[in-house]
Length: 229
Image 1 (cartoon, one colour):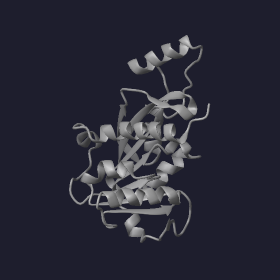
Image 2 (spheres, one colour):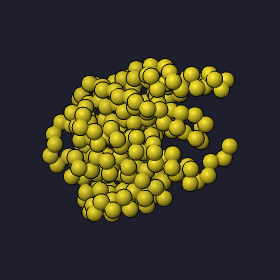
Image 3 (tube, one colour):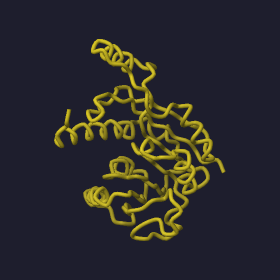
């Protein structure tokens, strides 16, 4: 069944809200474990309209948002403007940091601006990448040693939470079954390890997220790791 743009926007908005809810929780700063709280810099990769940058702005003096989509970057810049951020505080550029481009962004940013981040975030995008392992390795090179890498994405439904078990019951009644898709905690530990990161922390959303375009519900996770060397 086709989903009208209005409905589509609503479920995406609800999903965004769920993603950001944890970022705003009292437990989040210690869970994330940034090495320092002052003059921090963040890379928001596949930044979309800037929902993560907005949710974390209070912790950072400077955020660079990178996306391949020009229309998304227009929305990102609007988010920055709504927050009254200067381009020093929050800048959005079109780019691909996963390829071998000599000039990975447009407009071009100096290489030092694209390095030594305290935090690199990739939210709801890793599952779109052909080679997640290479993506994490590439992006980890942008982190300073001791910096934190955070991924927000889907994890397979494996009946490990009350919400998942309830959903399986609903599906059984309608004659459907769970379709596991996404990254497990072990997957993320392996991907982070390949990228030279450890001290992994993992959190599951308590409620499942409706995904009308897939005609299903998904299980969100947040994962973080620290760059070791």
